[in-house]
Length: 402
Image (cartoon, rainbow, N blue to C red):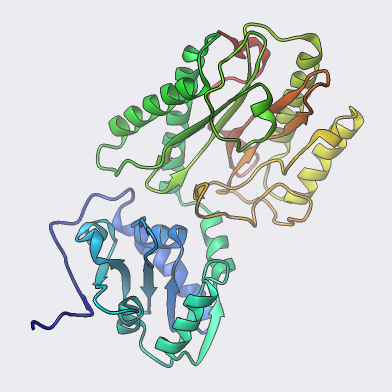
């Protein structure tokens, strides 16, 4: 019987055009190696989609299989399953090893072939499962393990110029989806039909603006009536009615980079009580954006917006923090949790960070003004303030539609 390998290099075809040039990925790896040096790490073993994508450009599709990126002082190698053939090689900045499934744990044998044994291993404690950590210990026999997840998150929070340029383009795509949704809103139309219109418009725009990209994961949450009470409520087949409150949410995904556009809307008309809450939330949104500047902490901003709502007897209707970082993240991977506008986050804003302002108020069903109100803009922190890179208008003047 022919011997079947544990792993191999299937470098099939030419390297694909990535979202960033080689110098960008080299700079990220240089930053990572500085983190490794500072923490005495010989090899970093990444398992999360966000860090693998950030440092290599390759965004995996797991389907229950483990994937990885191993970075040493001289190598950067993605580890992928045979089912993906040459695609991970084409989309990885540097090297790639394919592991086979002829025997269990060939993944860890492939990781070991790069990391070596008995080394100081950096890993992601916020992603590594207990089972996989036991396998890391068994196969790599590390002299020590060091959690570097927090350090890599801080690196990702500080955006390069190339990232900022990409994020600006992403926000323009989100605006395209917003206008398509506005045009699709009609009495009797289902949420799902409006969502499809927004998603299709964005995907076509992405294909036009990014002809060399892979197209995946762009989506829309479009909610109406009671379905607006939660920011992440899924789309349904509910039919729109005149006077309904709506939540427009567009999420283009481009080379693992996520942005969002979110707006309160009403179908045809808005009643007086709803208008009062909506206008108060818009005021909080504008006030919050004015606070986003270097040298101010996330907690400080949060407390000021809290005070704004409390003065208007609305604070009890707030359901979550007022904004968060953007970059390599999605609803199923990634989170730069150190840059969120919450009371328990003391991170100080710095130029080059990207953050949203998104106050939300939820009034329970049956009460005057019932529904969820949310505005959301994406802003870049500059040397003396911020740059708002969301273009779609907010507020009652533009968003009473259909």
